[in-house]
Length: 444
Image (cartoon, rainbow, N blue to C red; front, side):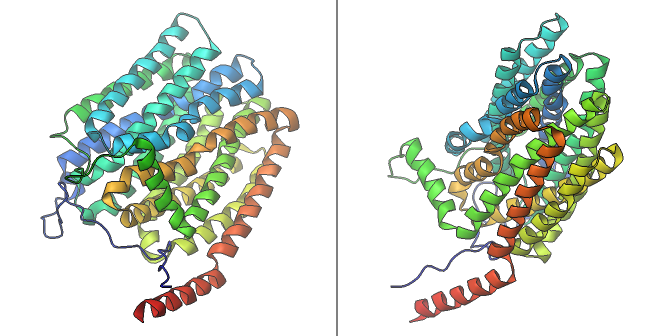
């Protein structure tokens, strides 16, 4: 029987047309991104929304930690913030493929503005309710999923296809820059007064809302084929899952990234407890996280070039090898400068991989499946992070920070071994032989 030629991580499939209205834009005049009003509005508004999330991310757990609650409860609040990435990704992907992307972004900003504002108001009045923190963290995470998927689909409406890698690299750099500024600012504002980071987050969501409202025109989903009945949402979810499942290398890569992101959530939580246990203030841990933002910013800017010079297989092997070598150093030191430097290195490589993987995924995915496949990818790479935060909270409580970090190091070493086996040179030669044989069968 004729075999199917696999689409590997290194060889993108044919890409759909990428014009603003679905047409081929190869011959359209390209406006530089720096002078593209639509792109700049979306970039600034979405950047404000990301910064708002960063301002409040660490303070959610700061409220729990510095009020003297158990470490497990801090992990529980972090779990609530990350859980939407597991529960909401797939249905959100289907709905984003059906709804106007700009409208979804507007609604998401409105809901997040109201939720984070309620936390600021409660703290101003002197109230700390763990259930309130957990609910708002969950709501913010839910609508951030909708916003992120919508923005990814909306980028195609404001830039030509040729500029897509540059636009996505700038978006990732923006997110990393927001982490760079947001983490220390959130810690400093919390030290000033515990409601300040949440009030500033509300103001940033308001700015994001105004920016998205100023965008011109609708950003509708791809048109439904004439004469065809729209299928159930679950059938559309299955289509996105099936597409990803058929890509063997992609699904293995997603599993590796999912587990490593769980480890990163544990590292971030551990850094907060290391700071507290060594007598440092919230600003100290925020500066360590900001160092990760510096590395992430530089890595994001380099990610677009990396994917052009190296295949995704090589990128995966290098990434996990470096992470496996760096993480034991973080487990064995309590020096804030060294922790910040190592975390910056890990974050920089992670950002480069994110840009490279996003460009690859958007290139190989049909336009009608962008939302659904994007939601599957986000589900895998981010959704399971919630369990990383929850499990790390209890591991830190029962075993201590150093033992927990050594456990994270051991797991990362295992991931590096898997990456080398699946994406290393020998595996690449086997894939090349397989493609050759499949091509020979097709030629008969």
